[in-house]
Length: 435
Image (cartoon, rainbow, N blue to C red; front, top):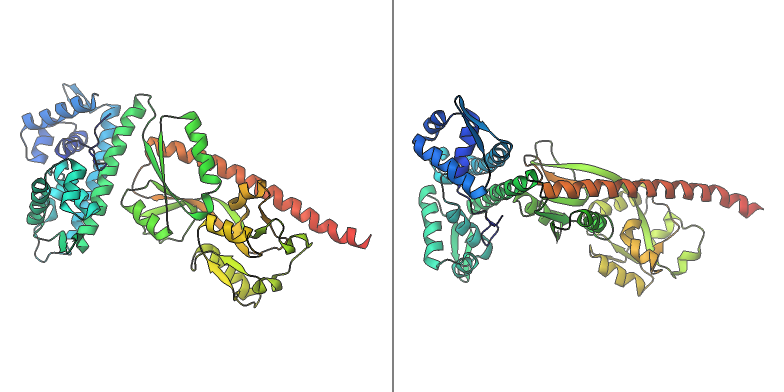
């Protein structure tokens, strides 16, 4: 299907999608027309036009009313999720404008607005310049300006402020952009759902990756899903957890894979824990300490360290470990979340790093890095995948999740086996020493 305009906005009529929602709920065109305050002819035409655009039958016309097909149910479900996002923006809007009229009467929040107008708003939000937004959409500057100005008139509220080199979104402009982008993300998934019903698995899954999973787990899952489904498109984004969470909430990514964070039960995101992993002390293979049978915790503060970013889950675990054993934080430490930076620092010095053994999977195979013989008790951290609560994963995202869970299960099995083996070795060493 080729229904996507240049900034990932689905080129489908929002009014037609809203008609599907109401017809699906009422199962009757007459009732739907009354609820939409439109004529029966207009509602019927909306359904017919959308069916022609999607090339599938959304409803079976029966003497008793309109019965949704499997396609109709899929489209109605995604369209409702899109409408929910716009209405969430409307609820927030009510707190921005004193004596504002009910947000349900404003086209932006009721799905009675052209997708082209919202596309212009999102393009300007992303580019910060009218000319760049126009170039992105293939429209004129006047068209972009007119679309945004019309939205501001509806809202009686500014969405952008002028800057010397462009524009910047207002506080509400940022909130509206987040919900509009999420609404369009749901409609994109609607198109993928239709293809999946037709037996064609396609679409895009966008993955936010945190440092822990970038080396082995996520690449392994991506390779496995693409072996079975080479027609899928996979993109990854890297950055801090805060950056990834913002991208997740706006629909720019489908999920985050990595060390999990705690969230309130009321939060709009949820986490599935895949397994728990333990931290290790990593160094180059020919590090002077690598030949020792055991390193004590008391030696750790005196080493030159490469540590994770402050306030990251790994850093917190290390800090708690040192406090528990009344040890001071290392005086010499470089803080970075870049594995390539860690690798370069370790290989060219006697520094050590706080990482998971999985993060040096390939470096260990190549004989570059290894695990030092020191136990870091109670440094287990949950590794998982974080997604939005209210949304349903696209078919492509579901396929990736299945492979991610399979890889995680394998990794957990290997970790348990290694832990048991190390326990056996520790038990045998005293016997060998006294022989």
